[in-house]
Image (cartoon, rainbow, N blue to C red; front, side):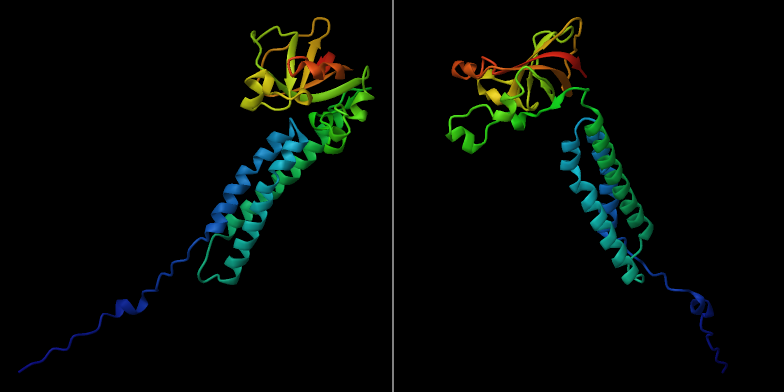
Length: 236
């Protein structure tokens, strides 16, 4: 009787185990935040304050990307995606720096010569002033008849082109575009454009420069009687 011996399959000895390594969710999130950080640069073109409000996006992208990169380097046998984390970090840092730098440049250079920058926030009296019956802050009252520069949104007019008079309001939320009686007197400025200067309606931010007129006596007549008006010869 003859017996045959089965030889073991030696090919299995040369097969290397394929190790699966996961990409940390933080690396993907950091990359997404890095791309989204572009909004800081876009916002900087119109408002430095808007740019600053959006800086948490790139800051969060930097933190998450660095933490993911540290995790990958600490446990290389379990995680991969280092390039993804580095890219997310680089984009977040790039757009954060570019947004703040560009926003600061726009803020410094956007005011026309011989104009004083004012804002709707400054036009609102604080609690102490309101209790004392001061409804227009003294700093704003002192600018009566002076050239000022202010940024805001155009309340939708009846005509959309060739506009020479409109209401500039604090924001473009529905509260400002609805019933005029709901708009506070310190959140609106009546703008009259001088000469042949005309505007076309847009939902974007407008930069207006001209001579300010303050009429605190109109407060008694309600929001439909503007307390602040501007004879403007600069509009952008």
